[in-house]
Length: 558
Image (cartoon, rainbow, N blue to C red):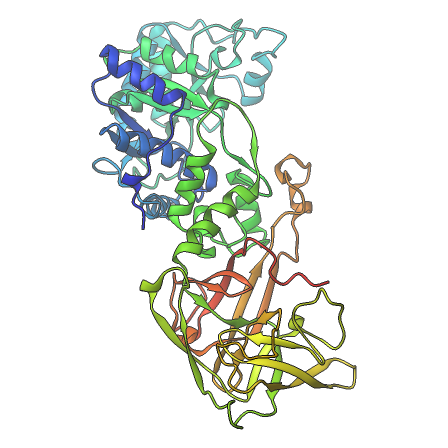
């Protein structure tokens, strides 16, 4: 299994910047951070940031902090904090020192706000939130100054302390930086840097009823932690001006720099936490870890490996170019990883009874076969697959009549049972609706695992011993959304495919699979890659999730 240390990230514009900074002595040790807001579970887009920030720290022998941006207690929860730590570790990374939180710096942030007030660079505004938006102007028109903008330093300090002490209701007052209401960049038009929130914080409890805004908190937290390269996505490009402005106007020595990259846009997925939360709370999916979601918890439960996700992030690279990545690119990474590591097994998802009429006669007496767990990985060893006169094959592997392109079992024709005998279908039984319920066949004597003169079947099908198998649940997952870009739809919930999950309650699987436990992976031959579900499986009754289909459609019918 590859380790993160062995997976060097490719060259990109950020590594070029770091190389130049180290060469010029601007930076002596690289320090990055991953700063998620704990208001939901991490998704595949976060994986790109995690791999980049922790990968840079690894490759340049620097440090990477895990810092929670916990400045909005209304939406944050310890459940999310715990899940984020679990996901980062699962991806194979360790953060520098203890977990950090923006709330660790609330006292210092408050004092820096007072410093801006004392310098005449911040004021308490009593406009309503709607009025602030109205006064801010548009991209074509400058904003206009608040009537409270020119209060004295003493009055602003008194009113800010009143905010801290609970003297205002939510929305009645806020603290704004005094910058430039005519700036071409709206984020510089006296942005709000503190607001009133009466909510219990997960870590600070009820100590505070005012909370700093992200743009004020983030840059100062970076400076306190001596971050050298603060990497975010392109939507924060304009906000870099505010990032720099705050640090230039407070008494803090460190001067971290912000750099922007394109975010990860993946087909047939949603990365908005608000929309993900809607899917969960409205019951469209089975929690944040539903295998149809591209949350890291969902991908893990579906059977994606951390190695495959790291490889995916390596392949898509780091640029400033916005683009949308095809889902097949992610699926290809997990398929390649599991192809090398997943042991093989046979599973019949839609069982059809097959009776070997001449079983027990000379040359057709085998009760089991030794088969490799992986044809290309002999170190994985062998397993014993039982055999009897009654087997299960897949319904799709039999037809009464078919053209010459059909390589599976049909009346009067021969196929080889995987690792076993050559058989010829001679008849079939049907129910009152005309559905085939049983196929009768004869095995070619002494053909188990070997060629026999006069018999050259072109097809191979798999089977499971009907008398010695595990009848268990298998879940087949399709794409959750019917369109490639559900987030662009006016009502993204209308694009949810309600048939994206198929549950097979009574699949027939090799008996050995009954003892499988999560997070075991298998290639069900001719079906796909599957894993043991970590949530609903029980001892002796594993549930199997489809991770990804095989590269080629091995069972395409004609």
